[in-house]
Length: 159
Image 1 (cartoon, helix red, strand yellow):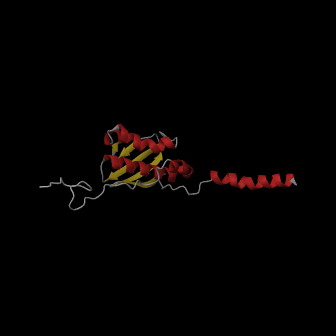
Image 2 (cartoon, rainbow, N blue to C red; image 1 turned 90 degrees about the horizontal axis):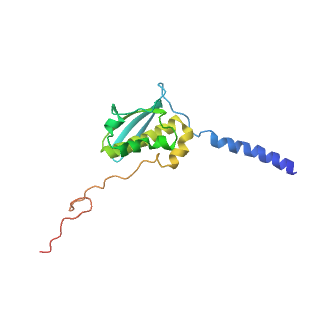
């Protein structure tokens, strides 16, 4: 009886072990072998294409060192590759519009994360656990009437 149970347990365990290795999603690659995704952060929108390469990142036709001069912004952009252990394995071409440099860097990071999961669906769980697939909803609060800024009031004068 225990032999039958162990045989059934082995049979039942085999499909369960095979399930996590197979990705749940299809690989999305265009005719040029690139994967495309859109990233957003604050008012910035980034269109990102990734393909296997040497790790060259181009933003709006310029190298990342030129476009994002601050090292912290370049660090933000390279986070998805660091998490997935794919540093220097993909070339990135991105076009960014709107917002400031910080928002644009966040948008490119979001786009790279999305494109990476489309190119390699097996990496989705790692990138998602780091929180890179979620669009950051934080944005600037609008100014209200009767106020100096969103919440700051004008100086109160008693007399």
